[in-house]
Amino acid sequence: KACILKVESRGSTSPKELAPFDVHLIPVNVKDEAAMELTQSIEASLVGAGYEVLTDDRNERVGVKFSDSDLIGLPIRVTVGKKAADGIVEVKIKGTGDTVEVHVDQLLETLQILTKENE
Image (tube, rainbow, N blue to C red; front, side):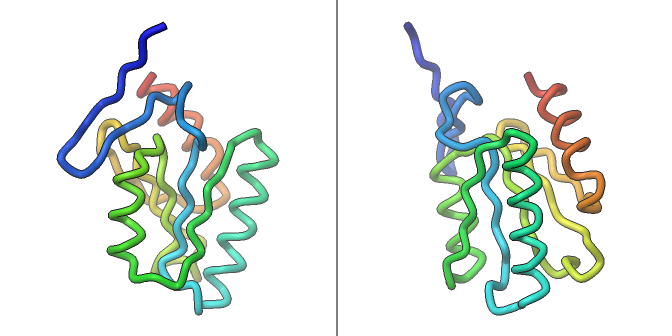
């Protein structure tokens, strides 16, 4: 069987079927308790919905986390950042670069729509 790996200037994108995880979940500030609670809640929700999740809870600068995320090349990145207190996260589809902000209540539905559009 053939394997196609899309190589970009900032890493690669693994085909969804071959990626070790479906979603890369990145909390920007691991010292922010509210953001970490939201991250844990999102992780549980995603896992419960059948997604394989890689959570980057290292105490690293966000630039390092994003760079590593680009290198790993998982299909979807969910970032828990400054708007975490409002329940807003950023979703990025790696293959297209499309980025949207969504409320966590609509996260699962948004992921289903975005992944279906990019198949």
